[in-house]
Amino acid sequence: MIILSVKTCSGLDDLNLLSSVCCYWSARVFIANMPGLLLGDVFPNFEAETTNGKIKFHDFLGDSWGILFSHPRDYTPVCTTELGRAAKLSHEFSRRNVKMIALSIDSLEDHRGWTKDILAYNNEESGCAFPFPIIADNQRELAVALGMLDPDEKDKDGMPLTARCVFVIGQDKKLKLSLLYPATTGRNFDEILRVVDSLQLTAKNRVATPADWQVSLPIHIKLYSLTVEFAASFRKYYQSNINGSLRDPIDGQLTSSFITSPNT
Ligand code: BEZ
Image (cartoon, rainbow, N blue to C red; front, side, top):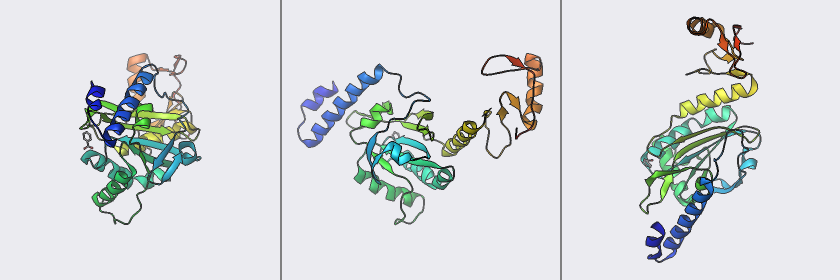
């Protein structure tokens, strides 16, 4: 139906729209037959035009971690608050050796104009450089290939907008985390930093972090054993629920050993 209505139009914009529609539907058919990116997959080494020039993704990452996050559209209110917050936290991401890059389905020209508005929203000098690049995916190729579209939110031409997608990529270029929010729900970038802290901790240590963990709290579950602080409350819970034993999440065996040093 969409293609029929486009065929009645004329002009370059309509041709672009038609090519976007074709690209969208052919990619949808392709994607319908694949599970999308899974944790542990090597992230595609795509090429893209960004506000900082053309990049090849793996070269852009170098040996840093990376976060790629998408936005529905430039100049929209929720996206502006999100990019403003991400820009404010950019020093926190670089302190963790995480390179940031955003994506939306608008042009470089739009991105450049919009970053000025975002800096103004953040009360920053208009001459400041925006702290991370934004990919211009105006043909929606990456948004489609990476499963970033939100079918419930459409633009004026009836084309789906980009959802609010987050990919965290490790130094080995593999996907460590993905989050997918609909276009109508803005993300919490403090939570994303918290998650990066957990990913980086658990990449280096055989530990898992519990609910609401923060890096400032010396609480983590070490190989199915517990820190001092955590053990006290958990011992009570597990004693009444599974007779004082914890179940090893890897092999499912019960263990009653609580190792209680936060640093072991
Ligand atoms: C926004 O950024 O304000 C927005 C974008 C798409 C749908 C809803 C809100």
